[in-house]
Every structure is written in C-alpha cells, then in structure tokens.
Length: 148
Image (cartoon, rainbow, N blue to C red; front, side):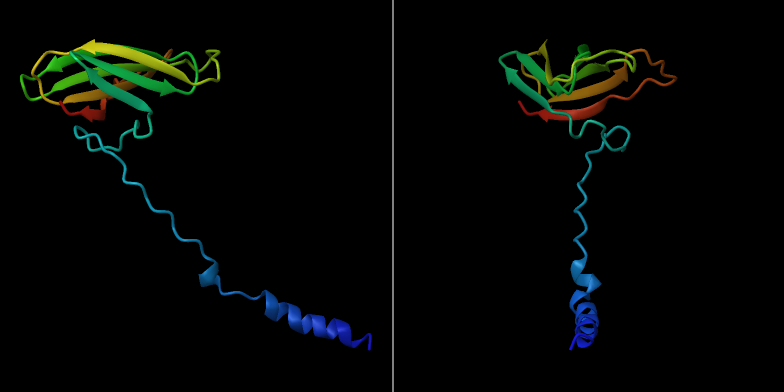
C-alpha cells in the first residue's frame, strides 16, 4: 500500500495546481489623465502639489504643503489683464542637494493683494533648486484657477 501513495500524489498535485493565466492577470491600472501646461502642452510637474488657494476680500491666500523644511515661496509677479483674469506667478525654491532639512510637513503661506473687478485668478508656479545653475530658466506651470 505504501507504493501507491506517492503515485496518487503525483497525479493529483499537478492537476490541482494548474490555473488559467488569463484569470490570474490583474486588470491594467487606469491611466490618470495628466494636466498639461496650456503654454507648452507638456505634462505639469505640479499635478500632485498640495496647493490651497482662496480669495478673501481683495487678497489671494495661497498655501503650499511641502514634505520637508528648507523650501521658500516667493511672489514673482501678479499681472491683471483688465476684467479678463489675473495671473499670479510664484517661485517655489527647493532646498539644495547638500542642505540639511527637517523631515516634516511644512505649510508655506503667501498673501497677494488683488485688483478689484477682475476675472478668474490663475496661479502659476516655477520650481527651482537652491544652488543649481540653469541654462534655461524652468517654465511657469499653471497649477490652479480660481473663479471670481
């Protein structure tokens, strides 16, 4: 009787382990539609940038959450095109490669005075790294539009 047990296991195991490879395939992940910069048509580098912006009276309040210390947020310019819209350009400076930074979330806040009776506010961000010299200045990417 001992000689039949290994033979039975050899017959049962291969049939029990077979599976249909088509059933085991995981569905392909859905591709996220990337936001594009209307000026260049390229994918935005800031799609996942946690940015909050709201208009409070005549001021625009912008808050960007970054993953470490050493970042700086500056206003590069705010240009109003009559009643059509207002373009706000911000510079986000990342810490240098050799900078020692904290590993904690930090909120960078900026308030900008807006003209009255303008249309939507479009926020553009340019990102540079401290200590890096650029042959061509990085482009400003549209990150948020706020209706008024």
